[in-house]
Amino acid sequence: MIIGVIGLGTVGYGVVDILCNEKKRLSNYLNQEVVVKYGCAMEERDLPDGVLFTRDYKDVLNDPEVDVVVELIGGTTIAKAIIMEAIEKGKHVVTANKALIAHDGKEILLAANKHNVHVFYEAAVGGGIPVVTPQYESLVANNIREITGILNGTTNFILSLMETDNLDFEEALTIADGLGYLEADPSLDIDGIDAAHKIAILANNAFDGFVDFERLKPQGIRNVTKLDMDYAKKMGYRIKLIARAKKEDDKYFVDVSPTLVSKNDMVANVMGAYNVVEFNCDYVENVLFYGKGAGRYVTASAVVGDIIKVSQSYNWQYSNKTIENIYPITKSKYYLRLDHAVDIDYEYYYSEKNVHIYITKEIEIEQLLSLLKNETYSSFKVRG
Ligand code: HSE
Image (cartoon, rainbow, N blue to C red):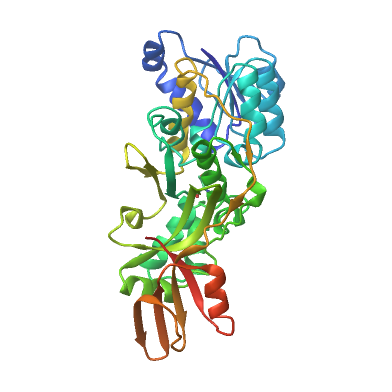
């Protein structure tokens, strides 16, 4: 198996490293030699002996020996052109490009079906945690009824730090930035867009189609205050950025919102930069996948898994349905904080000085907004 890795940043370099370090074992496993022929990047990098460096990705695409093109440059323009050209040339593709698969997955994956090649993207969701492959393979007996996840490690790190180190959002954000956690465009993390990319990718399989990404309305964590986190804690909850996808009757719901999760729920106990994905299925019931969602070797592990899978897997077939009737989840229990009492159906109420906290009964957001139309308040969804 001859491989060309395009993009030698954090993950790309990790992929070359693992493939070279583990070459003997992986080659034995596949019963064929696993060879990294090219490493391609804008800036020259030191590569292990035998790996050719090139600045021109065409060298990789035009080499008839290359079986698998690994796209790790990110972005949705050149990366897309590289992937489409590789597919048209009959090469398999492995990518970690979540934004590209979320936006243009339909075009790319249907082209892969047409040209009878694999395009695998396990590393696009949950870093090193296997979540895409189980959906298409080990869980295939099941209809997936609902997916719930913490899919963005950076925001989970920030929320965890706010709680454990008693920091406000801006302070925790600065620390996350210092550790290099934030995407080049931090809004992708903070405003829930990255989590939306990932839940859209998982929803595609559950819904047997392609979610129209432009219709999603993710909410991020900018409005989560230390104060609300403390009140949530008093009531036995943590605030997490929860991504969800589910289908009810003919409606599809895909949602990313800061949400109170009971500390008795395993999802609430996913701390720091870790991710979790819970599939609620009809036969196997609830299955949780937990682990690190980012990092050089963590993500490279998923990419290498996909590369090896190329010669072992059947072609995943995709439907050409675009799903446009996508809605955010609006019916929920809500956490409310106000400076006076209000008349609302609640499951829990707490007050001290001028603070009134409610966990409402399940209610549609429209109804809640109309009840609170003249009020100043802070509110978040509550899971369960
Ligand atoms: N910014 C992403 C995260 C990186 O924090 O989860 C991994 O996709």
